[in-house]
Figure 1 (spheres, protein in one colour):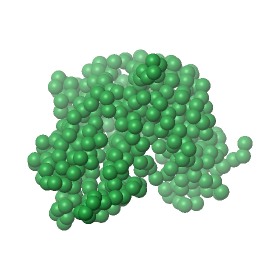
Figure 2: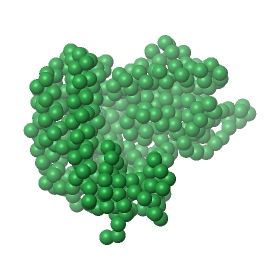
Figure 3: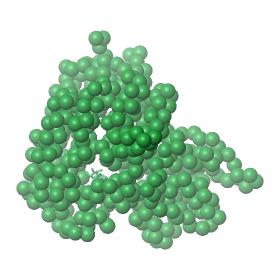
Figure 4: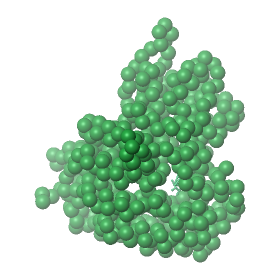
Length: 460
Ligand code: 5AD
Ligand code: SF4
């Protein structure tokens, strides 16, 4: 997904020379990147940059990149070649590539593709103003150093979401897990947790300015751990403190790792009505042999136990997952094990991917990427077809029930309809009446489409 920046920050001009201080930032990949772009806009805002939605009026164009699969990188290369035209028309415009592709591809980006003036990795955003200045003086500027400490805790992100109701707050960076297929630990570095006080302060400020739904973000939130003033704060404590800010604030989190999802966390969720009844729990595969090759550090049986425990502590919890089709050496039997796990779990939603070999990862070094493309595609399609059925079953079960919906704005299809989400993270569309964005409303579900529940407000 690509998003342009649409917020206003303080404008300024360098003394004497009329600089174009408008920055256009386009974001690819996960929510973590979206949160990072908000940090980048804040850092540049302090130096007088103003964000713009219009790439053609920008003096600085930043592409916040994703490396997770080869396709993500391909999209960015093709985007860069279209930006070439803008640079041809205005040679003063500075183009920067930031985020996860920076570390991996710095030489290639700068040398093979003369278009890019600036390459900045995810832990070096504080240096951006200085690096932009260096690029303006005609030098290529690069900083891709990864850090063991940087969390950007003291920076107030400039919100680029448009609805003003739901937002993301990054609570940690990097990852220590070393799943064998995954490039994240290499491009985003080692895991580090942000101090809890700054997280609570940021969420409190969001609540005060009208936000009602906050998602705490990390590659593996279950391993959040921070000692400050002699007190240890793990993820359950952080989640609890966030939920205590106000009962009208909904709190979500992503992503959990099945190996670390603790009973303690589930009990905390069960205790607070405003911690959302939705857990994203990536399974990746249903085969023990493949899970071992993936270095996921849990078995199918462990995963099943976690889901059973979720259901016993939080009966109304929805579940979503990530699955990979066609990992190295995956047999038909392994694939069927993935399908049967999905079916058993009855996931409400799933993100499904074909395995994509990433240079430098353990899988790339040790295992053959030996599943032919057409078999990967067929297996992925089988997963998608199954998930479509599971999602339809999950939505059908909701028909006739009443859900509390937090209103996020007008529905995409009609200005007469509003759209919001249930605590289970399901999208609900309903007639506008006199309801407003940011309010909670009780909706009885009447029918469902492939992606949405449709209903009407009721008084209960
Ligand atoms: N190939 C395919 N999918 C991948 N993911 C991560 N790395 C790869 C890869 N090399 C998927 C995993 C992860 C999600 C964010 O992306 O399912 O949970
Ligand atoms: Fe990648 Fe595994 Fe870390 Fe997720 S937990 S970012 S899949 S290494």
